[in-house]
Amino acid sequence: MNDKDQIILAIESSCDETAVAIIKNGREILANVVASQIESHKRFGGVVPEIASRHHVEQITIVLEEAMNQAAITYGDIDAIAVTEGPGLVGALLIGVNAAKALAFAHNIPLVPVHHIAGHIYANRLVKEMTFPLLALVVSGGHTELIYMKEHGSYEVIGETRDDAAGEAYDKVARQLGLPYPGGPHIDRLAHEGSPTIDLPRAWLEKDSFDFSFSGLKSAVINTLHNAAQRGEEIKPEDLAASFQTSVIEVVVTKAKLAAEKYNVKQVLLAGGVAANKGLRAALEKEFLETDIDLVIPPLNLCTDNAAMIAAAGSIEFEKGKRAGLDLNGVPGLEL
Ligand code: KG4
Ligand code: ZN
Image 1: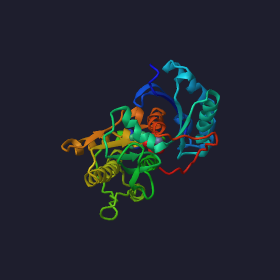
Image 2: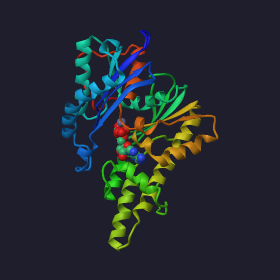
Image 3: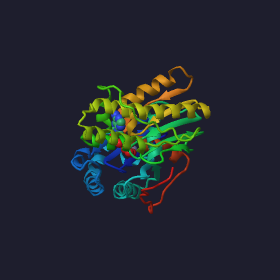
Image 4: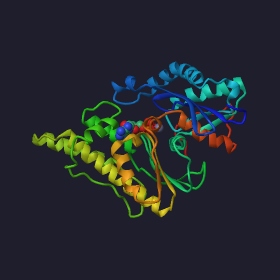
């Protein structure tokens, strides 16, 4: 490392992972530590906010120390502390925000607030340099959005979900099938064992709309299960999973392709926890293979919540001069 290198330490605690990462020059990961709480929330079938906050308090200093050891740096080497400001669970966000403030104050390091979704998008920059204009397809537990970016740090939401996020729909359908939380990976696995033989709706919405809606699909899955139970018929969970996944992927991939063409983008970035979905990754690869649009898909560990992505987005915000004071707060409904 030399003096000109830019070193960013980032903290992420918006939901159920306590994460600290350190990256060099916006793109090179020196440390990326994630403490997941999934095991603690499983028996409740979802994230319990109070439990999440308590875990973050317990984990944050341990994860921080581990990241500093991995990167083998001192606080004097760090140019900025980036932290997820929102959106997320307020009690969870506050743990990360307060840790970041304490570090920034104690070591006199600039504090840079980061939007969680900007982080998901910038996970891609750890894989490949961005080329603008680009389209980001964000599919996570809380968000389903198509975002147009004409340059670094500029986000125009051109489509979003009107009800459930894609990941939320996955988790709710999984719950109906008696699968553990989070259900997305289980549906993904089952879908590959079954066939899409059950007729389920696709919500295209108005012509030319890039918005999404998944609650109708979710209800259709629930109705299918109830009707079958009343008639004493058996439905193969693999086939229902395959049918559900086919519907989600068809709508998401079609809208992403139409948006990429309409906005004439050079690159399409996949982002968010549902980006780990094998069916979605394969369908996007197939759709963009024959085009001159460059498709970037992060590795699985950078799709789900982590702090390396927050550091990557923070690096750009830092360069653009974005700073927060010690009055920084966690903002649960922060807009991009
Ligand atoms: O981005 P993320 O880690 O947290 C949020 O910011 O929301 O996304 C978590 C979501 C969960 O709903 C989970 O079920 C879903 O991502 N997920 C998947 C897969 N892996 C994780 N959904 C479908 N297929 C997967 N393989
Ligand atoms: Zn996330």
